Image 1: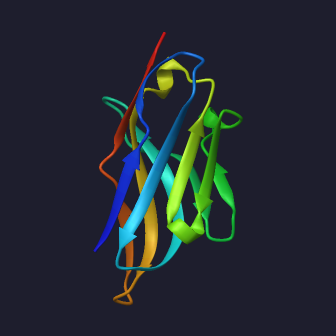
Image 2: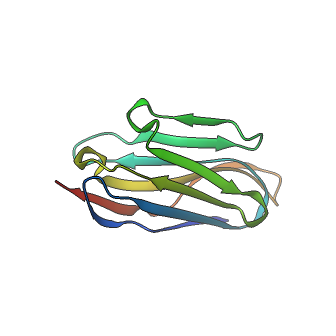
Length: 120
């Protein structure tokens, strides 16, 4: 099994910053891609940012220029630096990883989520 654990969420005023972290552990042979999604109340889960093993990144238009995704391949960790936060960024942020496991299977895994709340 593969586990993802997020940390770093919290309550922040508009214009502020947070740093989110996610650690992947378990039966991992190789992490192919990692990313962050978010889900606001009453809305569908959406991609925020992703980073593949080759270093390629993808950002939602709404966060470009404000959020930065990075990764530590040696530690199987992914980070999301979130700056210039807006009230509409309020959501539960989920870590995601696409993994090739020790059991020679492919799997898509999710963390439990971390709440980010931005006050106006």
